[in-house]
Length: 166
Image (tube, rainbow, N blue to C red; front, side, top):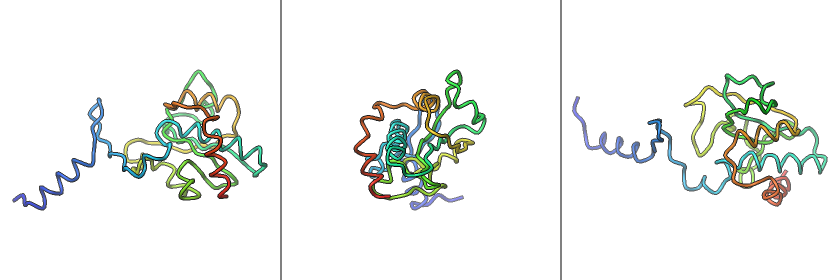
């Protein structure tokens, strides 16, 4: 097989669009326009702020949607002895999903809940989405299962901005 210049360019372009972690796993680089959203650790804190604010406003049926490993029994997520490996957290208001991307994009389609940084996490892991009413056990699971650097209080204004669009 002859390798052409266009083939080499494509290989180089593909390699430049990926980064490799310490375990050797290849991950797509996060697109620059996606970096403005709090999807990378603080998504759970935003979801908590959104859910709490939606409940205060009486917006109907409110829960948090957790994107997690398939092997985790959803009933165990509320047990702090078994912290889940959470990939993403969003809020479900009357069957419609919202996360920080909603500030610009509105509702998030169900099949996009597993897309973080422009990449579908289902390509790497077997994951599922489970919804829970917000309670202290679920908040604890989110705290233990995410790499957050802020707390929900830091996102109250952002949550209000997102909910104002609903």
